[in-house]
Image 1 (cartoon, one colour):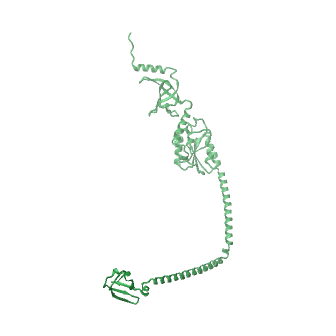
Image 2 (cartoon, helix red, strand yellow; image 1 turned 90 degrees about the vertical axis):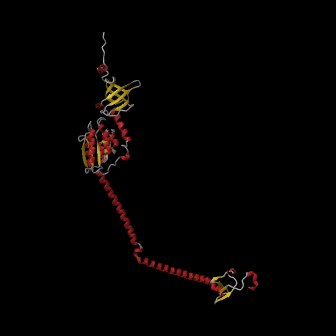
Image 3 (tube, one colour; image 1 turned 60 degrees about the horizontal axis):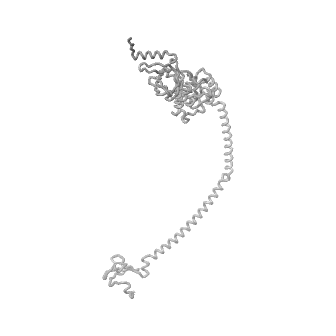
Length: 407
């Protein structure tokens, strides 16, 4: 009996049909840990599911991958739904996934936590980057559904609190696949318009799926880039979205956002009236105070009898002048006496006065002789006396101590 011979392709096709016709393998949920995750440029996901003892290749095509709300990561434990088939080219069987969710928590919650963590690291929630709300806005833009209860509540409260504020309604989708783009377009439109003081962005309550567009990363970045302060007013007080963290101010409800954005006109009037009364009271007090001061000044003796003060000052000046004259005269007299004494002392030391007392000056060639060493015998000398001079000749010179008997 001759054996039938098959090609590899035929065998792989046969095995693939067996796997795809298996009822159990066509509708399977697998819980395992992600490893070797790769998001291909085409949009497909390729990764491995593994447990303690084995592993399995998985492919999730773009049409299913783009519906996932969270970002798959290596080490994340997930539950994957799909069917098992064979990749004929390599002969490897793998799971073709339709749905994937994190184990232990919903995909939406996981996506929320992942985006929140990433934006927080980028500084989207920093208090220092949040813009302050103007106290007296003139124009408020409300970005929300034009048919929901939220917009009616906001309009009613704004008209009640301050009808002078101009309200601009920007109708957008707040639920569904196209809501994120619609909200981003509304934010960009108002920022181009610019002539708005505050933006209220929100909608009424709902499930996490209903509110999901306010957890979209594109919406979060559009809110962060807004040059106009944004109040996030999404759902009820217990509902929190990414928009709440990124916005400049979070209101627990749309109605509360209207209360926060618009100052009450009656309160403003009461404050103005209170300030006016306080200003009037302070003005009257100041006025009375300065009137009393003026009266005291007018009653002051200086203003009543101004010439008395001038006469007193004149007498004081005359006295000061006399005292100064006495001091100057005394100083001049004293200095004159000192001057005469100095002149007298100078005259006593004058060479002419010394000559008058019997002394003389001896010159040789117009130079005073102060030592016998300055002359020699037969030198001609001049002797100056008080009443004239004598010309002489040196006959002899000698030591003073040698001939004391001659002097």
